[in-house]
Amino acid sequence: ARAVRDELPRSCRLMLLVNPQSGKGQALALYNSHIQRMLNEAGIPHTLVITERQNHARELMREADLSQWDAFVILSGDGLLWEVINGLLERPDWEKAIRTPLGILPGGSGNALAASIHHYSGASPVSSEELLVSCGFLLCKRLVSHMDLVSIHLSSSPRLFSFLSLAWGFVADVDIESEKYRHVGAARFTVGTLVRLASLRVYKGRLAYLPATEDYRAKEDSPRENPFHNSCHSNNSLKPLPSDWVVVQEEDFVLMLAMYQSHLAEDLMAAPGATMDDGIIHLFYVRAGISRAALLKLFLAMEKGAHLAANCQHLVYKKVRALRLEPHSAKGIITVDGEVVEYGPLQAQVHRGLSRLITG
Ligand code: ADP
Ligand code: MG
Image 1 (cartoon, rainbow, N blue to C red):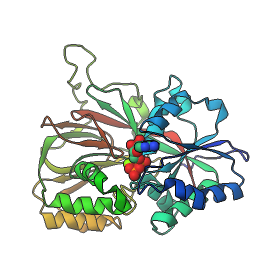
Image 2: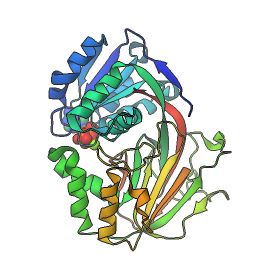
Image 3: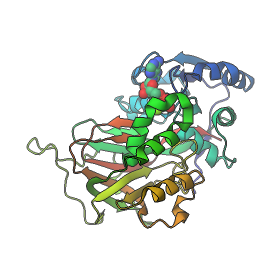
């Protein structure tokens, strides 16, 4: 592993963004009960910013004077970090802006990145407030590592960036349907999974990927390159696949899940082998034909990251650098880091260590 590490300056200037509506609506109370004191005791000056609406953090990041800040830290779910990262990448100086150290403290219902950071630190699994305290301590150590980002090109939206996951089928549907159970906190995904199992269905589409090989070089590493044709006559069609890509034979799926960090939720270790900057997209798909019982078993095993050892014939796992998904249906749900994006063909590719994250 390449341990690229820096330390934040002793007297760093930190912007702490809190989403008062995330999770059970407790993020501000969590700041008052735990984080404020921890940061003060560690001698980390910070400016508290309470977000007022969706996309507020994104706008703040687009306009921030980067010379005034050493780090942007969020206390919320993964959704607020998604806004921060995409706000930074929408700036004309995005290549510099995305080098600003970022941090995450779990205060939402979907705290996958915080759970991943805790896991990488080698500590045994914890949840809710214990996870917050653990991430608070890691933040106070002020150590910065590199984190992979994945650029995602959709047919008619601007390219966007992802730090966690890309999902289609069962997982994407659960992710979005379960938002209405946000008040139960992290258990929302368990509830959502059980509800969705009752109406299990097949998702049709074509999936292809570029396998991760040892001799891979960053030849197509530019986040600018658009895999869609630029010609105005064919604005919805993808360029032909290069010969080193693999096209999956099946076109009937129950789910496709691409992960770049270990955890999909606090208690779902979907990619146990993933590390922060391995430069790999951990691609999972489940072929149609799996029984409800077998699928449930997979999700239960995922709590401990044991699903790959479950010997499920329908589950496939590949390490890839890029992937292309072309759903056959006109409507459906695709999520990026748990957020809904435009439904349709897409291509994703990993950019190793593009961002920087405060970790332990
Ligand atoms: P959770 O894990 O509970 O979903 P998130 O951090 O993902 O928490 O936040 C959920 C959504 O809330 C995000 O889409 C974010 O843009 C939005 N948001 C941020 N600030 C506010 C606010 N003040 N009021 C309402 N929504 C907000
Ligand atoms: Mg969210």
